[in-house]
Amino acid sequence: MSWFLDHTDDVLSYGLQHIYLAGLPLLLGLVISLPIGWLARRYRLLYPPLIAGSGLLFTIPSLALFILLPGILGRSILDPVNVIVAMTIYTVALLVRTVADGLGAVPDDVNQAATAMGYTRVSRFFRVELPLAVPVISAGLRVAAVSNVSIVSVASLIGVSQLGLFLTDGYARSFGTELVVGIVSCIVLALLFDLVIQLATRLLTPWQRVAAA
Image (tube, rainbow, N blue to C red; front, side, top):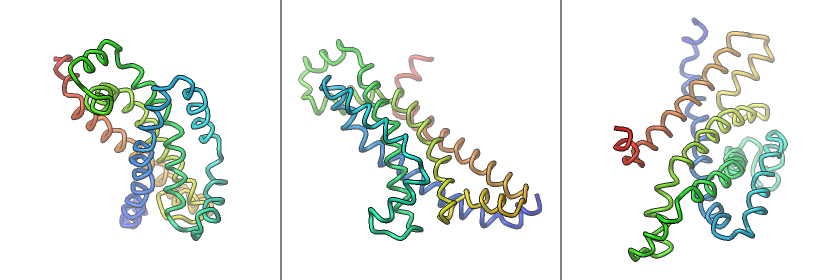
């Protein structure tokens, strides 16, 4: 406990960096996944290649991707941009199917009613289909958030600053306290991400609270 109190500033600093490296890709991945998921849902012939292709992205080993991206992007190996790009790729891999399934869960009669009321395809997507798909997409986001927090810690093996440094440094020094701090910090961060997503989902789906009441 004394070691933790002596290194509180480091925990907060690494924690904020970890939030940035895991959170920004979550938002970028969602923005990218929405049109891809819509295409997969809208055109049946595109569903298999888009879903399978995006899913295969998640099979790329994270450490290999962290090492390869600097050469591809022309960045230094310690540049956080490499991690953000890698985590965005993994987020897209997890969310494309979720978005497609969420949009597919919207009842056809609801879409038909919206069309009959004069909604264009674009306005129907943003005002009807997407809001109703939020609960399903939110579930996928929660999985992606926990995954991001976990995978980002791997970047400590190439020296990128975040909570994972406590794990690599603690292991190198056989210092159990530092390892525990790193593990607990990552767990707490994952829980915070999950809580924020759940709160955002409640705000975006007020009709669910009314139905529950």
